[in-house]
Amino acid sequence: MRKYLPIIISLASLILLSQSVEAQCKGFAKKLCKLELAPYIHDGNYHAAILTEGEEAELYKTFYTDQRYRIAICGAEALPAVEFQIVDAYRNVLFDNREHDMASTWDFSLESSQQLKVVVNVPVSGTQAEFPNSGCVAIMFGFQEE
Amino acid sequence: MQYNNLRFQIIGLLLITGVLLAIPSCRSDRSRQGGREVSLGDFLTEEDIFDDIDRAKKIFYSLPSPLETAMLLKSTGIDYDEMLLNDLSSVERYATSKSKALNLGIYTTDLSFASLFDQAQTSLNYMDATRRLATEMGIDDAIDDETLRRLEENLDNRDVVMDIISETFLNSSSYLKENDQQQVAAIVLVGGWVEGLYIGSQMAGENPPEESRLVDRLAEQKLSFSIVERMLEDNRLDAGGQENRDIAELIDELQVLKAAYDNIEVQTSAVTVEEDEVTPEVASLKSQTIIHVTPEAFRELQSAVRSLRTNFVQ
Image (tube, rainbow over all chains, first blue to last red; front, side, top):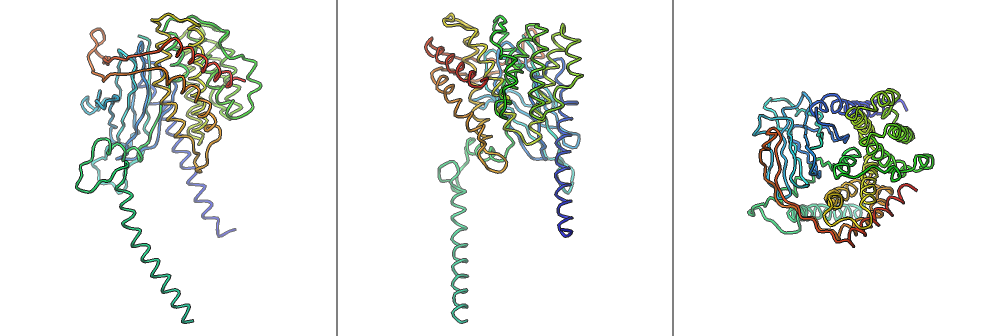
């Protein structure tokens, strides 16, 4: 039994570490990213994950008329500024934050309801680190009645 | 002994031959992505690139939350009807993980709906029901005493009430997703979304007018239904690769809704971005959506939603 002890301890540490990183992600989304939505009301949905430099994420959502939306994309401090694009079903890029000083939010309303895709990319930083940085990235939506 | 050596040599030779044969066949499989042969000299289309990336990417599917669902319904100009909400006394009888998750979503939509119509006491009652279900599901910190106290003190302030509902839903969904209960989180969302469909379709009545914002709003939910399908398919297998029975069952149950939506046509044009003249800081997305829903198709949708929701709240 004693010879398995280091393995058990290592596994337990790994599990605890991953849980603590996830918990940080939840706290990051709730305490920091949500603030970016004000004065819009957060819809209550939770979309956050640990991403590494060079990784991408996609989110699919239908947006409806009669409402104004704010999308907020936040990345942890360890990550370079997160890039994001909003794309329609015809693959037209409607917004690219690289053309807007890496803005972390975008406000919009719709003439007719649409299914849109949000593409999020964590760029690779210029630093010569041995391992790429990882951190929490949250995608949050707020809305207001028009 | 000599026989044994010969046997090992033959086995070794077969293994090496097998490995050599396997290498080109692996390459051949990789080059057949997307169902057609591609060679190194071919150009990849955008579709091929997306096909390749999608498998490696983190994918999120976002449904209208209970709060957004209630807001979308209210914006069509409907009235409040408490009779349509799920009976509070039913909270006692939800025993399975699936029924608890579905009804956590359903009660949260009911809570949001009541709050948007300033129904103070009903909002408190439904907050209490969602708290009971959340606690039974192990989500202890979703709605604490402090949340209930804050709600009671601010029942006349709709913005604060909406913020509290948003916070409690965020607490439960983040708890489920971060505790390897993605499937349960997906079921909660489907429950809340179907409740919105139920309230809306019942409000529309048997013979809604031809030009009805509410009917259009319900038809447009076909766009979200495609997201429901993808989200559930993505959650069909649990972390261990086993089929999740609750999700598989829910996919089957939703077939009635799929059949109803197959008879409703929703087409969207490409989007252009313009600056809003009144509020230039808010971009205006210009596009057209063509909705075609016959009275028969709408009645079929109403019936599908009613039977699905009855099944959920039983």
